Image 1 (cartoon, rainbow, N blue to C red):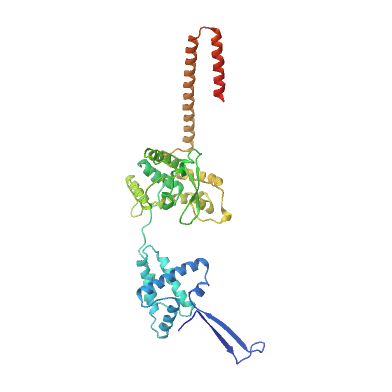
Image 2 (image 1 turned 120 degrees about the vertical axis):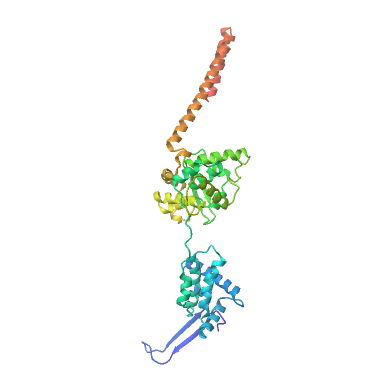
Length: 395
């Protein structure tokens, strides 16, 4: 039985002499327990094995009598092997099955990793767990494959945008241009967009904090997203919700997926037995970014961790993002570069027409005023005043 975390054993070989003729004395510090076992692994493996071990202790406390810890496991396993019961082999199989009930979202690989952690713990202490063929079969049995998620094409997004309402269009088009996770997308504020909308496309939105990895995403808005944001902001303005600190959306993460499902169905897109989720808009962007950018650059854009030495300044990423615009822009619902240039020209023409109308009104006023002035002296005073007014106007 093990009653402490370590014991020192002195082994003395008093028979044969060593190479130098001296008696060999070997001192072994025999440490046992969870901490010394974990110390032999890398940081990433240690993290996984620690979780697996804690879950196994929880499992044992729920299914067996007594209060379980690392030393009790070793004591019981010693008795198990000594008496040739080999009950722990079956407990590990049950642990693998219990994990599926404990957390249905755990993948098969995660459950196997946690089970492997317990086998490793016992193996470290020379109490190896050896499963029978039947027991291995229960673990190796392939789980039913999960349904795949549907990958949107640009043509799909085009169809969906054409039947969308302002709120849906904002979710769809801005979602596929920012590539943020659902939780981060729902946290976006009005001020995130209003502070930058006058900039040239692609519009840099600055760095947006992402919760999962605790890093910033260097986000950009393209032609589709700009138009969708402008339309949605008009709706928010009509509702009196245009304050910078107000959220762009007052919905949860799951509702993003539900809206996307309805929009997909309305557009007549057949997804077969594949699932729809908001995260696929992130996949859409990442797939296309990875075609034109090196890994660390596209990871920085969508908010994935990159080495500090690989960090790229936002203005450089803006030029990178420009490369992907032809692959993600929905032509019929937003301005392509040529259309944007044409819109600028049209706006300038309208401004010139407004100015021309102003000059016409000014000329008419001058003529009408002169008709009322009879003396030359007063006409000269009028022209002097008009000249001074025009000079001030130019300033």
